[in-house]
Structures are given as structure tokens and as C-alpha cells.
Image 1: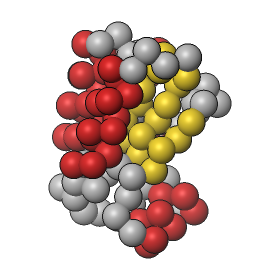
Image 2: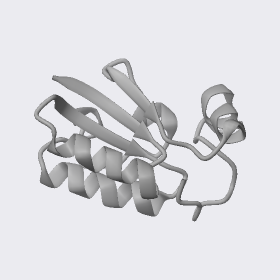
Image 3: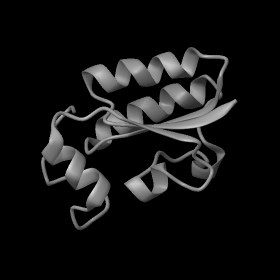
Length: 106
């Protein structure tokens, strides 16, 4: 069983992450997005299914560094475009995965 982090849990990534919550092949599923609302909602779903990462306890990840740790076996990026991938993978200053548009549901 795997520990998976999905980065970008908007319309498409959220569906993928929820499918992973239902899979018998995953131990933990962590969702991360620039939208704290999406992160909190997904974390609540993962907790309810018993698949929230133990490293985060009862709190959702607040940064990309919290979401992707040495315990993560796979990272799935579900982002809009190359620019977003560049910011998430190679830095945007805060390590949070993006700019200041907190309501962007990528």
C-alpha cells in the first residue's frame, strides 16, 4: 500500500484524489492546493475514511513541504499549465505551490 499526495485538488485533481481514497492500494492520501478551503475539505474526507496521513495528525497540510514528505511514495501533479508546474516544482518563494490567488481551484 502506498502513501500518495495529490497536488492540485480542484475539479479534476479532487476527483482523482477521492478515487485514491476509495482504493485498497493506498494507505494514506494527502491533498494539497493553494486553496486552503479545498485542502481542509479534502483532509476531512481523508480523516473520515481513515486515510489521512498520520504525519499531519488531525491538521491538514499548510504547505507543500507538509504535504510531500519522506513518507510519500508518489506525488500526482494535477495543474493547469507549465507555469503552474514551474512554480510548484521549482519554487514560488513560499514553497506553497503558487502565487497569491487563494481561490484558484486548480
